[in-house]
Length: 437
Image (cartoon, rainbow, N blue to C red; front, side):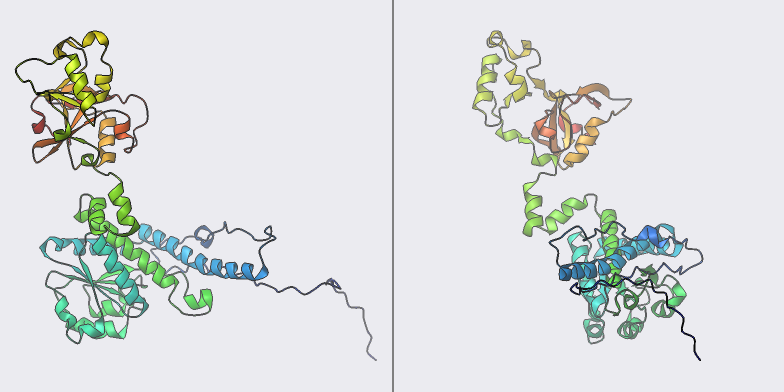
């Protein structure tokens, strides 16, 4: 005879309520697996986004919307984690650090000798390759895309003797790339952007021992993160690393990347933003030819002459031979000064020898920094830069325009309001000889 015992149950049943759709919570990314003993590991909690907003307090949000947004966050979290893991790798991993430096060196070595970067990839890696080609070119680093199959059918002629080849392959053993590799000149630098962090793990590098490894691993496979092996996290990481390579290489090749990019990108909203915003000193100067000059060279002008010149001038500036008066100085004229000779009026005009010369191509932000900092030189005499100072923009040894040290002049450069008193040193000789650098 079976004895029946009471069953204890902790479940609670609510009767009379409509069933609600259940939304399974997104599974968190798996912890990072160290790929090398030399790499220091970082806790996954430090790499994850933990500030995701909850939708519990948003009554208007439907269950379907919550489910969609939860899915979107579930995709973006592993990608964000992979990018932070990539940053950590390139801060700590010797192979990654040396590989990136070697890749930049190879790309910039022959750039001035009509060398270019040839990027090769298949499938999603091919699309990433084409995007990176556009980025490199816009930053002034010559690049082109080459499909490996087309290369085997005649397009190998795209590759020159001074070029660099960049393979993009997550697996490191893409058949089309392996088939192409033996046909590349042995002297060509080859860079392999792949998921592997060890040279011996990558099949392409095993067949090309001198190839440069650019590790772009992900902390877990897409099939673990999303249940499907569609390239998502891996392509995000490859794109980010390629962008970093493009920017750093461009910075080594060009002194001012911003001017190169503006020249190569004149269209669209980006081009419009560059064309409408001043970036160099030449963009904000008063051209010298636009400043009216007192016509009587035989006599000496008086205060009334300068006042009339400034009044008739569109810019408010006035010139008398080798002296100049800014609008700020002219506005300080008093009635008693009208009949005085300009040489007797204090702080009205500035002689050419006292103009502070600066290259017209100097960036506005850089000029502002220079004028903030004290400069010391044993063979220069000391001067003070203030709102009354005159800056002369020089190009090819000639003064092309002037700029007053007033607040409006450097507003775009970030100089705070108030008189900017900065100690600088000026050579008292013709202004076209003294370039302030």
